[in-house]
Amino acid sequence: MIRKLFYCTAIILFFSCNTTEEKKEEIKAIEVPVLNLEGASHLSKLPLNCINTEYPNRLGQTLGSDKDLLSPEELHPAFYGCFDWHSAVHGHWSLVSLLKQFPEIENSREIRQKLLQNISKENILTEVEYFHGEHNKTYERTYGWAWLLKLAEELHTWDDPMARELESNLQPLTDFIVDKYIEFLPKLNYPIRVGEHPNTAFGLSFAWDYAKAVDNDSLIIMIEQRTRDFYLNDKNCPMEWEPSGFDFLSPCLEEAALMKRVLHEVEFNTWLDYFLPQLKSKTFKLAPGIVSDREDGKLVHLDGVNFSRAWSLNKILEGLSDYNHLKEIANVHINYSLPNIIDDKYEGGHWLGTFAIYALNSID
Image (cartoon, rainbow, N blue to C red; front, side, top):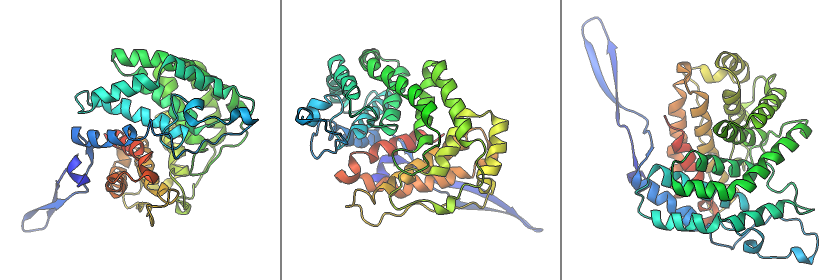
């Protein structure tokens, strides 16, 4: 059913020759998923169903006293749904991205109403206040920070009157998160290379995208310097070690996608030859992560790793014809996991739709 929601390419022509005649063969290609209006409507229902669903909820909160024992909505009036704060944030990003691409989406009125309701000036000031709490100064570092800046970037680059209102409402939290990045990055002596939330390369990639979109030179300079400090001398990343059992990010590919953003083309090509030399081979293979139990909220992370691998591969190959064969690997990964978000099981429904949208958006 889900495949009806996405357009696919069907045929590629291959030509082979012998000494007597030319033979033309039609061979079915790997399906190239493309987000269309119907697919966008389906995917929009995932965040719509959870951004105002308060429970179940994983707060990730450090309690200082009984006074901190408040409900999720009281603590986080903008981003209390979708099980945890970062999923609520990127659920709002999903709705902005879909409405921006498909203004005629069937539930556009509901999307607009919920965005205006949640991302209000009052709600955002309460969100900022939470980060000032004595025991939660490192809250959502840096995964939630990254998605907040991705939401801010999406609003900033959307030519719509409502986007200007939402961007203005969000600005105090956006500025606060930018300041948190600039304060934190000089203190981080070693990058975090895991395949889950704290991954440094992922957080820096999204922060970089925001900084470039709004021309924030201070953040750009900081990210470039720390990226070079952390990763410039890396070699032979062990892709064969990936994925770990709960990964939803690829440590190797996220790092390469960050370096693609930060380094100039010639420098990046040289770096990539040392870091992941196998990617240039036309015979390079990478099997999707296999999910054994989609009732298990941690094991379903591997659907996420398939989407994030795809968006990283598509970033790496941008403008580099020697790496065009990676498109097929990215598409295989998306096609493996895309059908698995159709039933909206809460284990994946509260976040996987976002990963699917971002992966589909990465396809050129």
